[in-house]
Length: 471
Image (cartoon, rainbow, N blue to C red; front, top):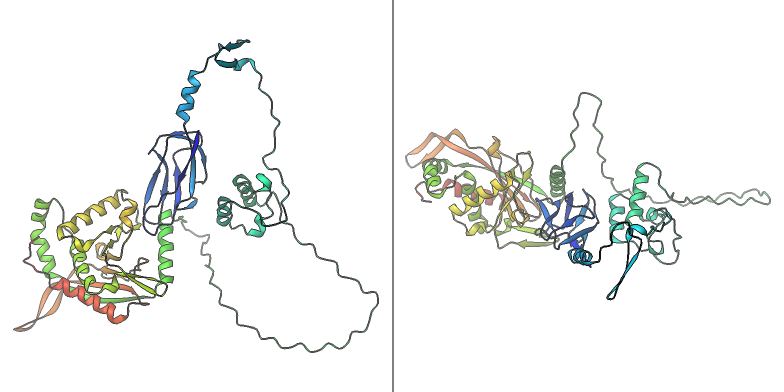
């Protein structure tokens, strides 16, 4: 029999780790090839990991809620179990309660299992202290180091944990037992504290000489310490709700974005009357002919794509002191989930799609997001993000950049308002469909002139929409 390692698969660009949500199998369970072994989650999407071989689960190396790097071994599968079972079935069966030994000319003696008393093995405690070698550095497996890091066990404390492995090495079981006792406030092995050395007693007493003045030391101004969060939980009439996994990931992503990019937001206003009238006029025929409902989202994305070709720096990312301009235009589309959380599926190569193609992509990804059927590849590789905050009635918004991108554009609710319209016959006041457009961008590389120019270009693209165009 052989052992096959099941590793954490790579689930898309820039995804370096995943969280174990649930194991579908436990040690000793039989698993078929391509059968689901566990559920995992990334900051993009949830997914399942299938088995790469057929056999019996020998060992699970991670627990639920553990964060596992891509490429790490997460389970071991013993293969060839089926052949062993067939070989076992071919062996000579001995009748129950028999006390004799059968001999065959071509086989070894077969002893009846019921008549052989099992040899008793004395119990050995699972936690046997070993002497740790003081010479050289102590070896720790990556799994032990990962557990220690997750539990915030410093190396000085890790070195004093007794190990039951070869040459006193700390095994997974050793550190898990230590963590369990540590959480209860009684670790099995206490870190020895250095005993204070006794101060030497003077043999005689002398009158001390006058102390020389100490030199004045320059004290450096200490670096500012991060502000610790203030506990706000009170004993009043409150409800405490723990964040779910996706909300925690969104929280970390937003805070990291604010800490990474210098956010600036520019605003403008667009007269989208032509676009609204065209959609009202053609939406029924569009759905009848193409089988898809057309919303404002593909129309907005079409305008954004046209402007990104004129301003390629908005379709880029920053790595250190280098600007990486992306030649492919992949538009992320912020989508609200029924749970209230947010996810950003990506329309790949949006500049190569027609209005019909954009509509199919928008509708397909939105439906997959709401039914939790997005694949890891559906949420990776975005180069620019669009969010429609007007869907929920907001007039405008200041969105947070979706890292590692450098800009995100938001459209607000479309409202009818009286505005001044300039014509060849003079100015007049008319009722128009108006919409605010805002864009947050990374001021490290996008200056205000470029950011404002891009927003203005998108507004002009929307306002010049051809009301007589065909789809």
